[in-house]
Length: 221
Image (cartoon, rainbow, N blue to C red):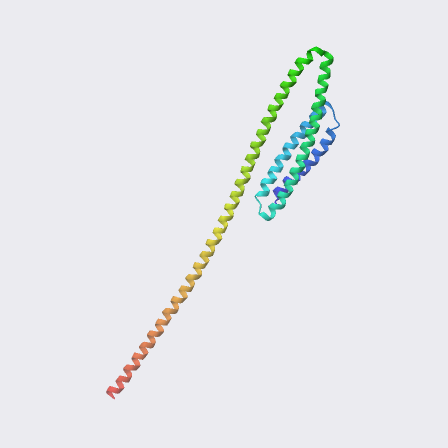
């Protein structure tokens, strides 16, 4: 397993455990302390999100036999993070509801007639601003996820191109070896042909010399 992946995984597990404990303790708090804890938990969730993205990118850059089990782990971590986010959302909703009830109660005690119109208008404006902020956050997250998917796709393409180059390099190396062996075979054959030519020349010369000797003896003796 990649040491880089192990480092991210260890950080995520520690952060996830801390966030779970903090969610449990935050659910029983009230007031400013509860808001502060929720803010810290949300920051931790963003950090956990970033760690999961880093683990995903690192896993996808590894060979297939290592990548598959790591991606399965990452899916489990994503599910765990979704559960944590749901818990934080539940705690935040209860906190907002309680704060809204307290504000309405205090306003009603101060001036029951003024609350009916002014407070309703402020609440509608606050709700509209919250909805706009939520839409902007969703758009930002969607853009971030699209960018992350594009990065993963680029990494996969680069990995495939690297494998293709390595395969081509191996093929060229094999062709070089075959050419070298062919040169050696041709050199040996050329040497044998030259040697055979010399042997044939010697035999022919010997035959000619023998014929000349025979003719000499027949003609002059």
